[in-house]
Length: 300
Image (cartoon, rainbow, N blue to C red):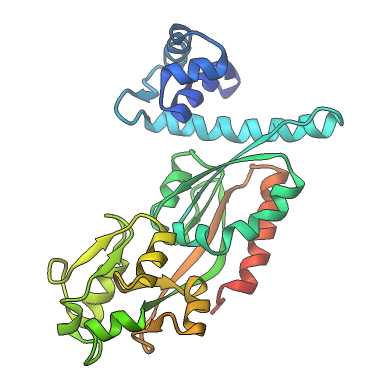
C-alpha cells in the first residue's frame, strides 16, 4: 500500500474520534452519523490491513494509527498554509497541537507564543505532561512540537536546546518557623509536608533521596497537579516545594518565600522538538521560542 492510496476523509474520521474521545462528538463535529464514522474507520483499517483504534477508555491509536495520525496532522497543516497563501480572502484556522510541561506553561511559554497568536490564525491544543513524558506525545504523532527534557529527536524531527529550568526549594517564613526552627535537615524534612506534581514527577523524590537520604514514605508529600496551585499552597504556608526560579524570583525578592537550600538546586535541560515537515508556521514559532528562551533560561 502507498500513502497516496489512503483516503484522507477516512483519516479525518480517525483523528476526530481520538481528538473528541467519542464517536458521538466526532460525528457531530464532521456532520455525519455515528454509523458513518464507524464505517470510515473500519474502511481505513481494511485498507491498511490492521487495527488502528484501540476501543478502550480512553480511546487510543495503535502504533500504526499513531504513525498515520502524525502524517495526517502534518499534511493538514501544510495544506492550510498553502490555501492561505493561494487564496488571499480565504484563511483557515491552523491547528497547533503542542505538548508542554506545566512549569514552562506557567512561566515562559505563553509570552513566547504571543507573537504567533497575534499574527496567525491558529487554534492551540496544549497537552500538559511532565517534561520527561511530552516526548511520547511527539513520538505517537499526537503533536507537532513539544518541550521536553529528552535531547534525542524522534526520527523525522529536529531538536533544539532551549536552556535550563532551575528549581529552588522554597517555603514561607511562617512555614520555616514551624517546621525548620533548627534548620533544614533529614529529621526536620521527615516531618514537613512537601509537594509533587503527579505520580510521574520524581523531582521531589530524587531531591530528598540524593541530598538527605530520605525515601518515599519517610516524609509527608502532597500531590498537586498544577504549577499555579504549587505556588498558592507554598505561599499559604501549606507546604514547602521545588519551584522554578522564574516563578519564585518575585517572592524571593519581597521576602514572602525563602530559599531553604541556597547551595542546592535542581537543573533540568529543556529541548524544543518539531517535525521537519511541519511547515512555515512551525518554523516561525520555533524561531520565536528559541529566541525568547535564550534570554530567560540559563544557557550553561
